Image (tube, rainbow, N blue to C red; front, side, top):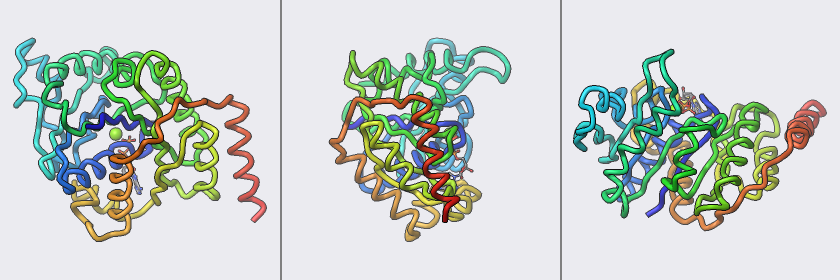
Length: 274
Ligand code: ADP
Ligand code: MG
């Protein structure tokens, strides 16, 4: 089954989106893993109803080499198998290096994951070192980038696309689409649509900014669990279907910085003209 990675700038909505997708897929009857690759360790919080009690790196630190599956795989909503890579103590060590060690440990679980859906939730402003591992080492093949219409988010998305383009030549990794997560920028959907086309991919969803997401977050739940009949939950379920059926997997064509700035200017200028 599909091995998916969700990338994007910090704070853009990767974990929220990933957790809602996992919840929707689990509810649809698929066996799902969600692997958090962000030293914040909060990727699986909405599925577990709390911060992951033990990350892979915590377990490595306390147990050394002998890790058992039970220590690092935590069952969440819908029986989603939740794993957090973890990170170094704040201010000490390199987070990217932590991801490398954690994913290395997860290799032992790979046979269990083979026939199941795996979602990696990866912090990736720039695809450096450890954060490139899910792309570089073939852990994931379908890469989705979460972005808003803000320049810095697009800039990060474009950098991630550069990373994918670089590794696509040697392996099976492909860009599967842009997931728009709105910041209520004027013309945002059209901007993201054009950005996706320029990157040789498509805008697979445009998720509005909705207070139901915040309400669910306060309850430590996904929207799928907290407000299953909400419009937002329906959009996450639609996107989950797209993830399963998407055959539009491409090698991205990253933009030059001037092109990116021009795009933002074009839609920003259009908005001012209204
Ligand atoms: P990331 O994992 O990319 O760092 P998060 O998923 O943690 O980002 O989201 C950052 C914040 O934005 C969270 O408080 C989350 O609830 C909020 N958020 C994400 N998507 C939406 C949305 N569509 N509508 C409202 N709030 C959102
Ligand atoms: Mg996150």
